[in-house]
Image 1 (cartoon, one colour):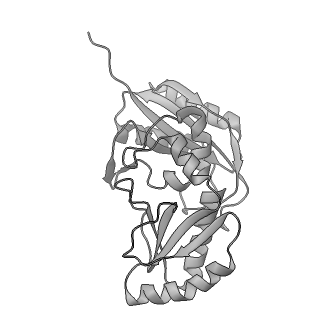
Image 2 (cartoon, helix red, strand yellow):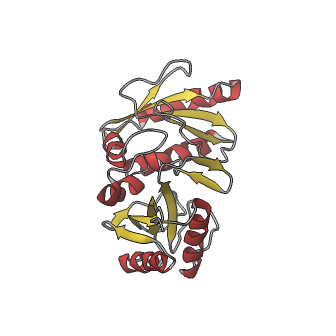
Image 3 (cartoon, one colour):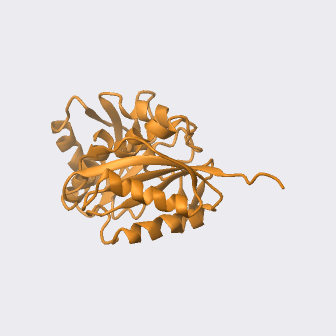
Length: 254
């Protein structure tokens, strides 16, 4: 009988309601009971909450494991364990008891409603990459073709340079013209916003391109290749967009 092949996966752990490092260990023990192997967790870090409704500081960690569960089954298992710890999904950036996100599943690329992997925002979230380098530094993002360590190194460049463009419509252009003066006023040593024409290629020293759009952005798009480091930010008003950009900068800078 042949040896059953196991897929290596990266899991992000987080929470800020009655949370502790022991809760993370207990959650990973549940994964082990459900057949996951070689479960290893790195440091537990304290991170800034993203958004006014997120509550107090978060604890974040990362774990690697090997499993014969398929990706959809593993995601279902993660949600079941969240429920054991009384996780209630109410709002996107709200407080939570336990968050278990499937970040990488071997070299799988999936962009269907029931399973988006790699996690589309992992490459620009410090609270994901910083704990992940402890246990998964050499795991490679299958569309960006960079290791977790390389993604983290790119994110930690200072100042972090972001190109910002209009999404292309007339209303997007009005948003861009109203928002750029405020971003210039907010410039600091950590973050640099660069206005740029959408038709121009992304500059070599740019971390990401931000596309401003008037309207609701329903999901984060999956980067399709190493040159597709674009993030859409939208809202119905200038104030809403500025809030989204603030959330984005916190997620990037930590």
